[in-house]
Length: 107
Length: 121
Image (cartoon, rainbow over all chains, first blue to last red):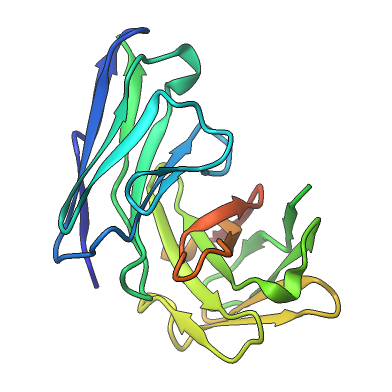
């Protein structure tokens, strides 16, 4: 199975900060990567697919980049509602796998 | 509005069985492939199983292969997961998740609220 590794596992940031989360695949996955946001007690929400395409309704402060094995999710200006856990997911293989998650906490 | 509503979770003893259901509404269920994804308490997300729109193609994670069976009834707009030989490590919230309609878009664009399965004696 393709292993997805996110870094950092957690980070502390302030409202207005620029935040970057990294996701690395154990083998090349082209651009078959999605990002999700999950808040406590809630289902995940799709943010980005195809590595850089913003899902409808998602604020433009979220952006994604990368291809092959290295990907990033950037939140350009962190808002209070963005404090959550973020997951990457590859869909290059039919055995889909997630990263372990990155928790974004309030500093 | 797309809605996915899971049910059937609960407490079961190790070695026992449970059947989860997911009722879909707000979209043409028979046109979409569907999945089960789980999340152990305090842990990350784990994809469990996939079923194509016509049930012709089915995949399982290695961790559940041979014990879990995914199925669907397009006439009832419902997705199911039959879970047998349950283990403590199967304890998790189980989510029903829809695949995107984008070609090769095997990511999850809608999720249910989840149903908790607890395997314990």
